[in-house]
Image 1: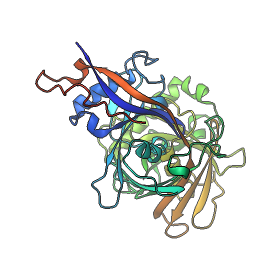
Image 2: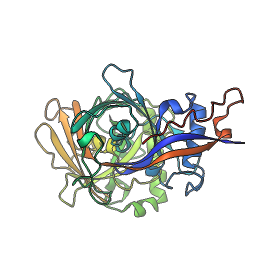
Image 3: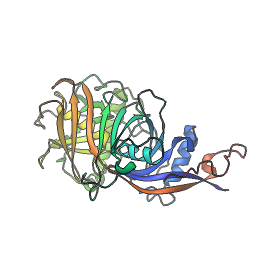
Image 4: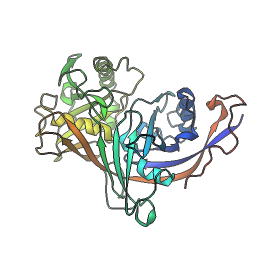
Length: 377
């Protein structure tokens, strides 16, 4: 049994990391695609020892890019969350951290030309239909990764990548408040079910007997917490019109608490069966909108910023993240766009070898040697 080579870029994007592929180098059938990605990442082992994953949900993410046929967009970004240990792939969510690498990767892959010292790329997130404008520094006709921007959760400094997220309101469920209420009670816990960039179930940390300032390690060791959150998450998924979410990573769960380090609110984000080491970009948008919205579980925890756009500083386990929420009118739940600053870095380029068995093809289907070997610089 042989192996098929697939060209890829390995990118650190925001506080996530994973391979970036050209979409047409991969199977179109979802089941085959899942098997190929599982093999590439090495899902099925806690260390992803047989693939390039990093043994954590933030390092088993995959981005697949192609030229967009959408009239608005330049590039299509199709995301996959590959599990670390149980050989599952979820195509429902998108990932805002990985999205910060889409602009640089699209240029590196030849999907979009450089346009002066700053290149603007319009990106369509295929999983959710969201539209994002990325501004990438491209002096001297190439992507610049060096800079003086620091984001918490990543060592050192790098070039800023400006992201403007449009169409984030109700991106998965069709409504910012999918249950029709700013607050619901599930299993004795008050929650806000909200869909802004990512459908989430948000609760107060104190209602779970927590301060909301625990470390990731402390939270991951609290099995009783995860069992209760999962019961609430599944029930909330049904109330949000998402059906049985037992095998899906969405909706995600978030806990909020009063800020203690000069921020607007403290947040802990779950993926959902482990704690995010920092904060997801998509989750940050939803948590920030919750913090700005009257009647949610954020009432009494937040000194709400005024003005449009309103900047919410989220405190997470490794620092802070600023989220600028552009509301149509201050105090109203009408999100026009959300802006964030991220960074990214190209780590490696080359080929991943995936066993023929993962592709599940017959001899007549197997592509010619080198079909997926278009080198990515």
